[in-house]
Length: 372
Picture 1 (spheres, rainbow, N blue to C red):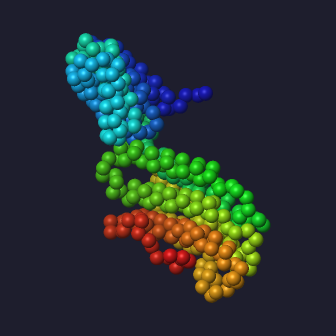
Picture 2: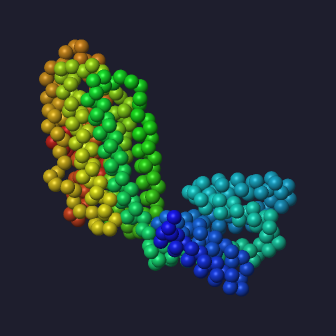
Picture 3: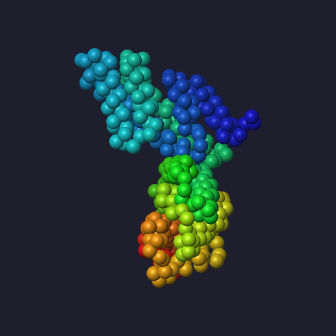
């Protein structure tokens, strides 16, 4: 397998760090290349997050090591180190550490078992070499073939939109089957995959925030990314609900038109998401422009359902099936409003008039709304 630039960057940075630590007269230099190896992975923002975690975990572990050895020296060693590690895990969870507490635990164990006679020198030197390795690693990620978190987040968002569009097409295809509603598949597998993909998007947001700093939260591109993430979350809930509330089988008369309107709306949403996807995927290299033209609108077959539902044209035999469709109509209306609201804010942010816009959670008026 050929080497890629990230492998070369890691090998070069770790090698230089190891050489510098070896030539240095200060002991315990091995912790510098270890810190480089720990943080030089993924993107620049991810490396910064890992570096912060390791520094906080190191400080917490060193503080608990000193306190534990001083305050718990009168009890048995297994109980003392267990109490110290338990306290470390508890405080690490309260501080939001995800990997840093592991570094702190390593410091507690190594300091207590191996370096108990040289804590005065081992503790500050280990912290020094760790911080030095983190700084070298982050600088290499920034200066040597930089890998940014923001373009990767945009590409992941584009892939997420494609996955949601595929799921919506599958739900729409089920409405065209002759025995729609029969069968026991609730679609948990595709929904679970979408949720995992959405969780990956949210997890990568920490790296983007760390890379941009606090000022990046108010940037229109970042606000737009959060808007798309909220839209993805809402659409995943729509897919989940539609798969859980299967339509009644054997539809006739007006119920057929009802199902056709649902299917047309879901396909229109899926087609629009596919138009969004390539624009969003390339937003990491070029600023994201306005949404596609013409503006998205629900299909006529969906908008014609409102008079169909209010003219009392359903027979008494249709009412049980119609009740089963009620939850599906609400979910489809949510999908329609999500698309309209997202494009409205997208157009506002792209035109630079975002400073006075309301949050994306505020509902937007759209002429194609069927249900409130």
